Length: 38
Image (cartoon, rainbow, N blue to C red; front, side):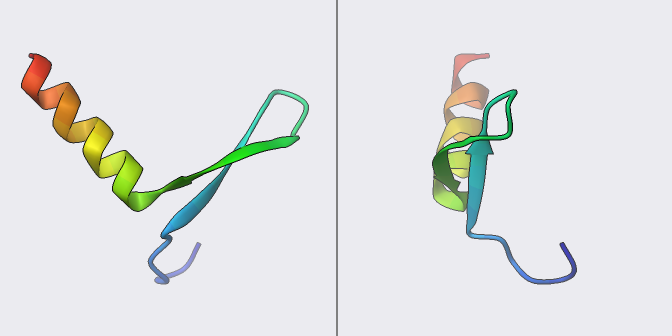
């Protein structure tokens, strides 16, 4: 991926079909929510 900041990541299923896009913001929110639940 190099040094470029990735803001959008394709979400693929087991057949390598792109089923959606996840953003860096989505990941950060998910991590924040995960930490709060512990």
